[in-house]
Length: 186
Image (tube, helix red, strand yellow):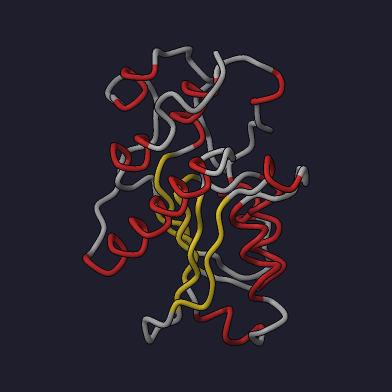
């Protein structure tokens, strides 16, 4: 079980500093993971440019084939479940076997929410790499009820899985945070 510290209200610039705040420590990535996480961040920016919340996701095979990509489309579609990771799972699960999905890595610009973590579990994806963590993201979202999330880590959802789901993040936090600057109502 993850033991996350309670959310401490921060100003957005302070959201990136983790020392003494109980925030998750940023992890380094190799070149491959960095490349695909940056692709997910670019999709978050594309989604934001279309009026959506800034989240993106990419699914990549072990052979570096991009199996699918998505951005959050909740504003475009009016579908409250149109999160990037859930949309990506909807796109790829009919096209690839569960065995193929188990070998793939899902890259997400932000830590998957509870719903998206559940979709990742049901898809059989076994490796997730994410950018900004939920705790830092809450500093951008503020206290508006329509922008709050269920304060449960994706790691808690993955820990309940009968099979291991590797979860790497937060990573490239500064880059992943750029998409959120000015994107949320205060």
